[in-house]
Length: 125
Image 1 (spheres, rainbow, N blue to C red):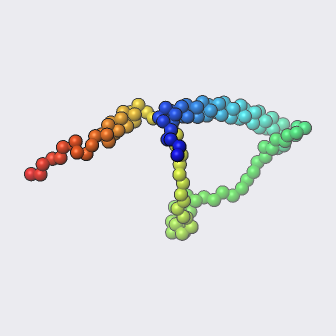
Image 2: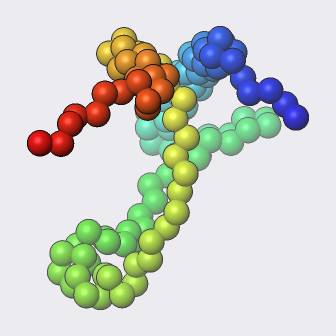
Image 3: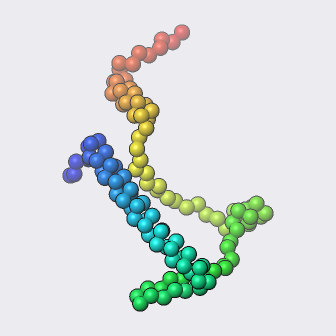
């Protein structure tokens, strides 16, 4: 059976993840800059398509209908309720703990470590 990760291992994974996210953000910014350059070129030339030897840029106006669920809910709540169903999700969070939370966690851990027999019980009057 595998041993659970230590607090240090969890913190190390978090720091590595944060560094990778920073690298991803930098790369996404570079990709976005290239995309913006290509969009600007399409607009400057008044074209919806640009072609290279191995690549094509498409920056065409697309109009499509969009369902307005909030309007349906406001205008016809019974109909909206009849066509909605609960969904399940399991959000994943891996985030830095604030100093305030650390202090609260230490207090909770200290209280949890005290045996119930050591906690005085108020006498009934």
